[in-house]
Image 1 (cartoon, helix red, strand yellow):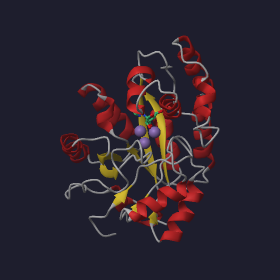
Image 2: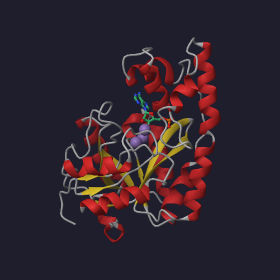
Image 3: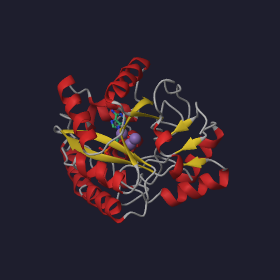
Length: 284
Ligand code: AMP
Ligand code: MN
Ligand code: MN
Ligand code: MN
């Protein structure tokens, strides 16, 4: 594949916590000049057939994608999987188990919010849910904006939905090794998503990447909507030091909420090996 490519290998649809259906995400990626696209909904591959069909109608190259929620060192870490067989039974089963806790967690979040004086948040969040198996914090955030509790979703996260705040419920997600194995055994490549977002100490970050590699993980997101230029440079260095391939993705969720639109990112530093070099045979 030609390099540099306008690859966007991280974004969301109504199958998880995005606000556009897969077909509209595909159309927007295409309109923005994306050459290689992947829809990476949280903990769910149910949107893959729609994304793939839409990409094919548009003549847009496509890699299957997912973003798996993992608990590592008592924090939530996201692992993006690319180029796997989305019919793989272990992957599908593992993702179903990962999603399982979301319903009870959401009810507990609503109970906590009720104690903080915000009634009906579960039913309110459900109005924004596109996939009944995937209720996530942004659905709550959208409802709290709707009822005027906050002016936008970042404010809701700051005041209600992050650690130490009234609507935050700690949760156990998948294990790092399991998530990496589900992806790799289905023929895909596992990538650590937006590493700067975790704010790990150097020691914990080193442990994350060491264990990730031991389990078969191969990549790191270097250029993402979540990284500043300095953070991208830092993770470019890390990719070189640890011999990881590099990925690029906007993490687009919504035209109203996302500051980085599909495909509108700096290129990957030219000296890195792009993740798609490993996935040429898996491009649809
Ligand atoms: P959940 O998987 O339910 O914990 O929700 C996580 C999602 O919430 C992420 O994938 C983002 O879409 C969104 N999110 C997390 N932190 C923030 C934040 N500080 N501001 C806005 N959205 C956020
Ligand atoms: Mn999200
Ligand atoms: Mn993420
Ligand atoms: Mn994401």
